[in-house]
Amino acid sequence: MSRPSRLQRQVLSLYRELLRAGRGKPGAEARVRAEFRQNACLPRSDVLRIEYLYRRGRRQLQLLRFGHATAMGAFVRPRGRTEEPGGTETVGIPSDDDDDPRSPRAPETRSEGQ
Image 1 (tube, rainbow, N blue to C red):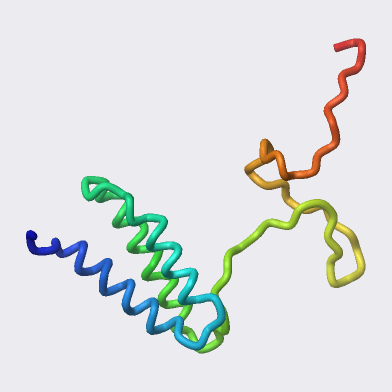
Image 2: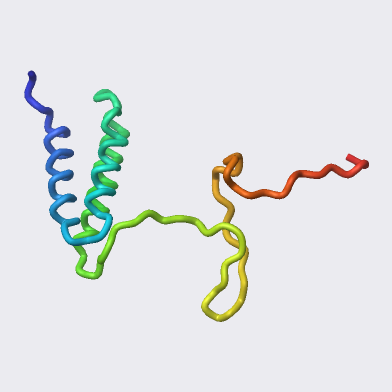
């Protein structure tokens, strides 16, 4: 087996650092493992994507190490109407996956003029 490249060593180091930083924070270790497993199938030749993910992981590590971080989660856009703290209702941002069969949508209707 050949020696790991510098980028491979950096990625493995980041993985270990993220796991250490995530100890004791709910969901962090599982999220780190899932994220790395998801991207493990990237070809070694896709260096730009790997470097991008590495930089993103470094930023996440800084946030995780920050003293106020208590957990690690994913950002989810609200669907439908949500209530703001002032008691007003706002319409949530629709997700990018509008063709998701699980998303509740009203059936499209066409008027006779169209």
